[in-house]
Image 1 (tube, rainbow, N blue to C red):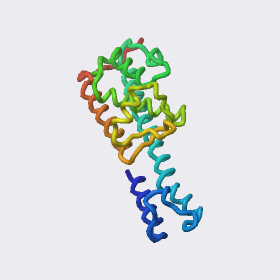
Image 2 (spheres, helix red, strand yellow):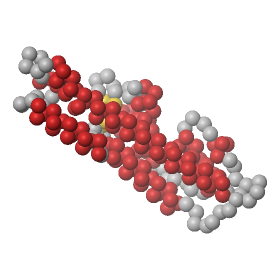
Image 3 (cartoon, rainbow, N blue to C red):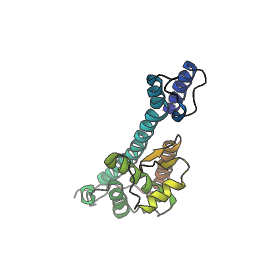
Length: 195
């Protein structure tokens, strides 16, 4: 959220440079406003916040993966005669970690709205990393999620647009997810025995 505040402060400084800055880029007059001001407007109001929000979403999901991996590795060291985490490797890390926790620890996460939303965050993250944020409209569930979310939108080119606040909600969701995971953890001590 600190970065959003920084962008807002930079936008205030920019507005102070101009008297009566237009509300949007569409209202800029090339004769009245030099091109460098249009570029600065675009950077401060569109490019930088968009890049920051997309990066934050990727980071939030990476934190989820890292947290689950760390938890699985901790259990792997303490479960006697358990399967190694490497037996659960494939392309979807979070799914693998959930399978490991269910199979080896007995933590079965319910299929609820939280898990469903994390799956959508993962899909958006994957599209940002592997497809430049372009969303395939054949993925009707994801398109519906984006269209119904007040902080998400699709551009005319079908690129995901993320509004302020969405990444904060992602971090809050992931925090809630780990609270749920920790509440399901076995209460007994497990000590590893030699294999």
